[in-house]
Every structure is written in C-alpha cells, then in structure tokens.
Length: 293
Image 1 (cartoon, one colour):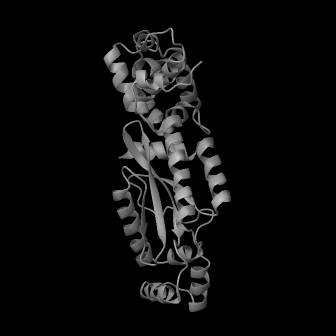
Image 2 (cartoon, one colour):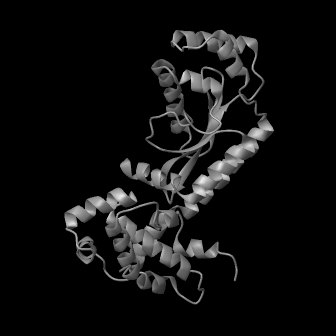
Image 3 (cartoon, rainbow, N blue to C red):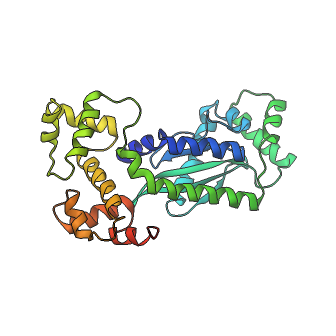
C-alpha cells in the first residue's frame, strides 16, 4: 500500500535514520537500507559499501530478476522476526521487520556477505551464472570482486543483527514523532496548516476548517497535504494529538481519560484505540514503561 511506502520515505529522510545509516556503515563496513514492504528494487544498489560483485551483477536484467526473487522471499519470511537468506551466488542477506504501532511498514536490511570463507568451487558456480545472465565482466574481474566480499563469522553476524533489531525498535518508537515534524522543504501553505493544527489540536478539527484557515480549497488542500506529509489529514491530526498525549502521560497526576479529552479525542475508547494503533501499546502500558520520576 502507498501509505507504508510514504512512511518509509519520510523515515529515510529523517536525521535519526541518516545518522544511524552512516554509523552502521562506518562501524561494520556493510550496506544498510530501509525499504518498504512493497518495494520492488535492489535494496543496496548504489549505496555505501555495496558489494563489488553484486554491483557487477546489477548490470543485467536477468541477474537483477534473480536478486529481486531473493528479496521477495526474504520479505515474505521476515514479517515477524529477523531472517536471513542465501542467494544463488552464495551470499547472505538479512532483514529485520520495522513496525509503526501494529502495522508492518518495512524492513531494515543488510547483507551481501559470506558467512564462511568462499571456495574456488563456489566462485566457479557463481561465474557460470554470471555468464548465463550476460554480465559483461572478465573472469578476473568477477573473481577479484567475488573474493573481496566481506566474510562475517556467526558471532559477529549475530551482533550485527542485534544492532538492526535495536534500531528497528527505536525507529518504531520515534516514527510518529518524525512524521509530525516539519521535514525538508515543504510548501508554505502546508507549514501554515501544521502550525494551525498544532495550535488547535484540542478542537474538533476538520479538513475544511484547516483548508479555509490557510486560504485553499478543500480538494486542493487534501491532495497537497497528503503529498507533502505522506499521510492523510485525519491520520496526521491523530498523530499530533498522540505526541501531545505522550508528553502529558509523564504527569502521573493526570488520568488517562483527562489526557484523552485534553488532546482533542471525543471518547476514551477512540483515544485508546488510536494510541495503540500508532504506538503499539495502550496509554496505560506506555505510561508503565516510562522512567520513574
């Protein structure tokens, strides 16, 4: 669905993700990517630390198609837990699911590695595939790229996967905050709309009301808002309210019901449902996990 693709796009552009990507790549020497559930592209092509052999394979559509089939299989088995698969060339890729509340939106992925030192026989099988796929490279070029592939022993690989899991959890926690923050360059009308929503989030806001406040037609504003933020107006308002609620939950003297109405929800049931859908836990559970003050 386009919503998860838009969410992943917003998260990929966030400072928190870009800083992690840089740190992970520098620390491990491996590529890392954040891809949406419905992505149909090579996750590491053109990225920092891309495997040189995989870069050669990406020249031809037949080798790309083989890699994409591996990526599809990896996505299918990684919906709940981190999983790894091995491609026809003998290299391993790993994916960790990323969730926004109770919704699977994508995967943190790394790989293009060997789990054990490759053999000459392995290379010869990979070279045969490359020739069948029409890859334009000499035998020496293929061999050099193949044996330059990083070898990651089991214990080190477990630690790398653990890093991905920790960051996936962190992304899940901060994703709502990232999505309601102003990102990059956006149309001034959207910036004004966001400010208006922030100031009136406790009111019974409607799309038409906000469109009127920023002097645009409801139809035009609806399309522009979704394009700029990656989510629809109703979801955005809910997320702004949830962010406000997260801050109010720090105050142990406020009841959950008080917070629900304070941030603009008309019923406690609706508040609880939206809160859990957005953050993956109820307001009471969220409060219970907050550090003691």
